[in-house]
Length: 288
Length: 327
Figure (spheres, rainbow over the protein chains, first blue to last red):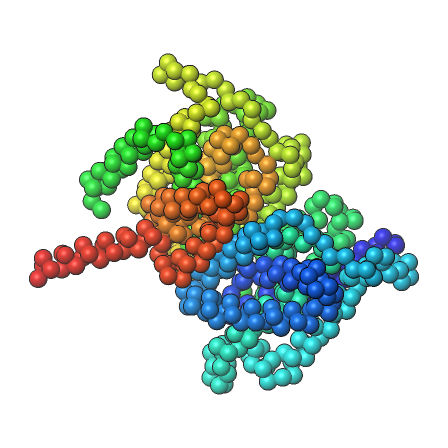
């Protein structure tokens, strides 16, 4: 029983960060119909930014996130304005392959610049886990969870209650109708891509103290984030939250009760099954 | 191209391929040429599915890996010589592609691509963990290739030339298969599927059957490439033959050369492999940086690919000339 609760908790903590990555991918897909294969690399960039700001300037990752999130937003805006926008008219598959090229370029430039060594961020206060009710909770993961929950709630309010947020949702639901309502969809697209990239980068910063850092970590994360968004239904933010938590749970429970070696495989099998039988996601809210 | 011109082009190509090892004595250059030939086969494998049928697979490493593992396991555990093992590797990959196709082809567009990615990752996990068959992360190593006598001479496997001949044979087969496919009824179906799948279905094309058949052909070619890889590098492990990067490289080659053309994969392989190997000399992952960069540049400025653009330009000029003649 204790093992069960333990893996439940660590699954949910990890899942909250997965969910953030997934939300980033899903809002971009919703508005632009782009599956951004370079999304995992944006997480990786966030992780390395956190690593270097701690190593070079001694800034705690949970503090540097305040500066790094807007920085990643700017990175996203620049990528969209100067690279992606010109390719989108070429069609879905061209854009997909373009982001595949970008992913390879960024990951290998990082590998060239920073080498393939595994790095870790150690926090002086994060050495011993918290032990509420006898369950071990790593400090870094707990703070990460808190911040991810805060960011997700803020995003929820932004999408739900502000004019810009409504414009994003409207464009996501029906682009033509949004144009007819006088929404500047081009502006919405820039904003959304920046937002999605910022979410990925922020998740990277928050994940950095809990995972190994290496330049090709994006490869692993991008496949995970596909699993998440497909589970929840492509284009749906609540779906991505649920999908992220679910994947976290499946991984941690699967590692304990099924097989540690096939832990990652469980996610893929779930992914294929959902794609085949519930292409709109488990909750039937996504767009096919 | 008229039939005579096509035959002439094939003959010239074959002569050039046969003459090349006589001209190139440098072992490194010959190694690069062998890699170009191997990547042409792999690019052609992806091209029949991605270029002709428009089905973008991100999981071709799985098929390549099946070929490589089949060839090396048959050799090490059952003593099947590689020249039988390579075609058997191709067949195993073709067989393996059927269930993959039946699952993934129920999806379209980007969803198909994502599903193939998941399949390839699953294949890698299986290879990593099914130790009794695949030897897990350690993989296999071939120390000695079996003796073979050809025309009274013992084949020297330490030299590059026999591998060159083998790779040239495989490439010839891959290009020939692509050329035949393009002229066949199946080829026409595939183009119809690429342009508009619903319309193709409406006029009576059995799209699933056509796609599964094409994937099998694609798998066969990728498996041949994998088998050749196993013999040439004499080393197979999950990271070497089943990683995502490999799937991506297989996409990039026909993409850069020209999607849905016969010679595109060859042009793409010549271009990417030459640049890649030149950069790899300096630093290990350099070629992947350039692959990514070229991919972005090609899609942005040259979506038909190098050969595709050249063919278009040529056709345009010919038409112009004809137009003038008629007037």
